[in-house]
Image: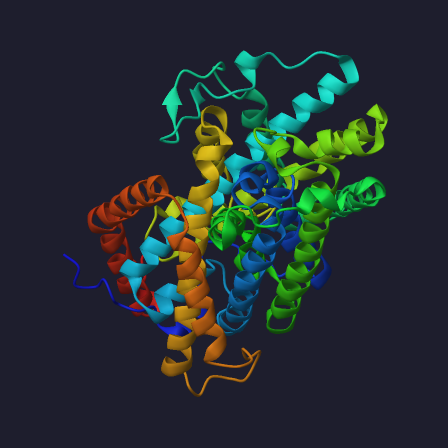
Length: 485
């Protein structure tokens, strides 16, 4: 059954990938690519993660952000080298297929689907909280609980029936709005994302400037109330905040001069994101003590109101969040659609998902499938259930990239020179160790759900993907004139 589990995709086949119609055009510039990485990362962590992580780490959450960023940085270097050697769609899925084999590639593809799908859903749920906050600040009325909250509630095991809501309608609508925008094409989506990302940067930097005016260092004592274990646990959750770096690589096939622009964009995005994360976390803790972060879905508006005493400043922050945060869901759907596209091109998924719209150059069916997958997660699950799973999927994917780099160096020693990871092999080994450390800090509930997901992926490989991959290899091995039309 698993005879081809470790069958590798030939390296030369990647230079001219096969599609049924128009290829994905190289239209994304360095500037757009950098802002795609920043835009898909910034709205994820800092607008929502403080309420989830400050109770674990206290003021030491600042170190948690730095620890997660260090891990992401080492992995970003590995990503940069592998993606410049293999500049096609599919990100870690394609890297794994080339270096480890089709079966492992399916498992990494499942992790990417988990990573992008749940990240998009979780951000949509957080966006709904800010939308409700904005409506409340402006009108004095809230969106009815029935239509803005999950039917599930938090308990000690993570999830239980009995929440006050029926469906998170704003989150559901956001997912489909993003899908409609993506159907217009990559170039138009990238321009919109750039504008939204710049708006987000301005909003967050204004928040920092206003909060620092009332900074109180007393809130930083004790700095690590739960020791380094708390800092590590928070860093494991925060790691989902760096999922956006994968968006840079996932757009490899649509980037102008990928050998130059991908490494630069990844490092610029990481530097910008980490700086903003640390500044916002530091200034937030200077305004209010750690215990007041618990259960605050739209925490930054509350913090700013405390810092300034001005209702208008909170309105402006909530408005900026509502306008800009959805760029994360936008890029999450973009990334998931490209994973479907790459897997379908290899025969792992139905061929319809690899077709590109001849007018917009968008894999439209993959985009619609992404929205369909994310919709129920956003509509019915609370965000606290989603964050840990995003981190698990992201950490496993980043782990695979570091391993893929080492295998690529061994398997392709004579490949054309390009970007090279500094301090090799220390950098990929350190990345592997850091990812494993953060994985050990996730909850047993996350392990259980992730194990079930991987089991389902193995069943899918045995029942469908291995047969489709074998058919695709047969088609590509035949001379072009012998392929039936």
